[in-house]
Amino acid sequence: MERSLEQLRQTQERLAEASANLESVTAEAVSKDRMLSVTVNARGEIAELRFHTDKYRMMAPAELASAIVEVVERARRDVARQVSDAMGGLIPGDSAAREQAVAGDPTALLEELGLGRVHPPT
Image (cartoon, rainbow, N blue to C red; front, side, top):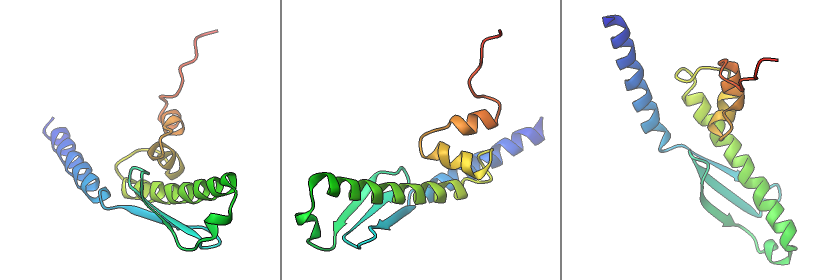
């Protein structure tokens, strides 16, 4: 019992430390044409959006929107990978399942842990 409590305490300490470290995690992605860049935080929220050229003024709205979405998604994937790596020893499952869970879709991780959808008996 004492060993289990000690393991729990150590896990809680590691989680608290990892959580504190994640507050500073960011990822930046730059568009292929270097027109814009996006920085996202550990939660995948846009922290900064910068336009480096005036090219966006000549773009159709749909084309500009597509360019922004593509860069934001690349930055979010990068930060999700960083978070997954940082939490690697603390969250069960393989790296891909952890990345999906961090990105907001825990389905693969839950299924890997045997906690996926429960199918009614047939």
